[in-house]
Length: 68
Length: 250
Image (cartoon, rainbow over all chains, first blue to last red; front, side, top):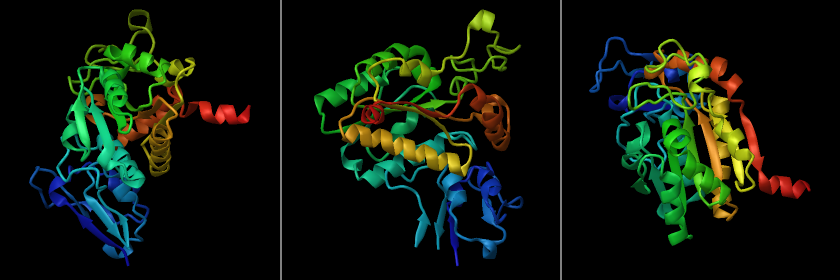
């Protein structure tokens, strides 16, 4: 089972990770605001994650850690 | 098992780049390559002037900040003073292709044993979106509000093609980072550029076609699409020079 960890405070809410996820696991949390004032990414459907690491490869701010 | 985590060669500090800027992706690729080759302790990076001017705050290796465009000249000095070090420059298009064109061309012509990472996003980012030498024909920028007119401003400079006519450079490749397969290919190219230096082969330049969502006036997603639709037809990806491979063939 894959595990995702986020450095939430460094997220800029660009959403590039959301788009590359093949399983549509990620979403920007519209009800949360981080320290920088952005809606951070969160795993909306963590059980669907296959641990491919695409989101982490795409993230320009290296906030995502993927374990499998 | 860890599939992906922050590379060790990048410090754990927030980047100042705009949301969705691909500078962060290229920083990661360079850092991953430094990690994989195990050269963090002997690498010296040269930061440019431009958006990535503060790259020296992000890489864990030694860094020097060069005057605008002069990164290849500074890198030449560092590499000649201590050839055991691995020296790379990280430059944008306003730095490398404009004010630093002379330094770039001459470093390539001399086949200096350095690695150049060239970010081409077709605009001046840090100063607020002015036209760059690499801005596309018809591209709207702060200083070309009706689109770039080649009669007035000339045509965009293709750096890889330009340098490939020289005898000097060892390796020239153009890559992009707008999708996962392209990012993987870009990493391979950057790794080869560093390996060439370790093997003493000479000047390697990797041109990375990048996005600038803020100054292009687009969402990060649309900026990546714009790379695919507008930039790649004018700046085709591929290897423009690989002297060692050519010599083996002969």
